[in-house]
Image 1 (cartoon, rainbow, N blue to C red):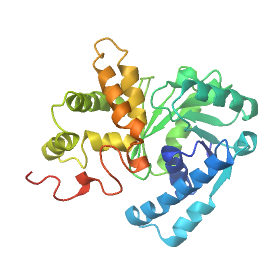
Image 2: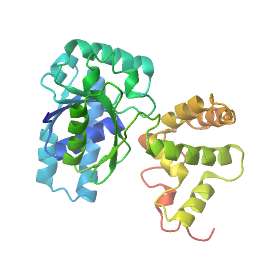
Image 3: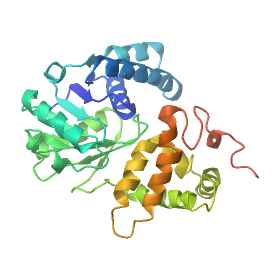
Length: 300
């Protein structure tokens, strides 16, 4: 089950990165979005990766040009997925929106296409049946920085065919990323399962007024040698996603304190349009956050 043609549904931060890295690796890619305005925004977003690849991966102007030539855009779902070997869903983390997308996809998708969700909060088994092809349905989760030598988590569901699973593993390797293979469904996969308590702890310290975000990050970065602390990571993941995660987790037994965290995120961040890197401001200002300065870890 060789993969050649890729469709990425959703051209947000992660979706555009997935598309760009796939095209950079030689794949033909179509980015599907629902409207002309959404496609225009996606094109602007995708263009930002030109400079990133030039600076970080030393991509030449010719390579950047060829990468962009491999990317097409579509607003008609049936046209977009025609002949697709792999369809990667990277639309908003809203159950109703995803269900609507998969119901529409089931009407036009080929039985040979492999379908994957990039969802960070939902399990693939939640969409397998509605997709129309549960044997070809699984999860392929990317985190921010979708470029070489970064992890991509692969998680099947009970009906996933082994051939489809292995084809996705091979695809991840072909785009020069590291396949992290899960053998059973796990909410939040591996990385987010490990990351969630870490970010919760940092946000609770902030909400309780124990220390300011910069001080918390500084302590972590000095102690571990990390390139950023929890609040830099939260800005990177998009604070709207962090808010939804805290709100959902607060419903779990013993997690009631996260209600206050979610509320503070909403009033001090989201209501002020401070979403993190994507909006230019979150806990830090971008493109040059304070934690990236050489003096950030010095005596204060």
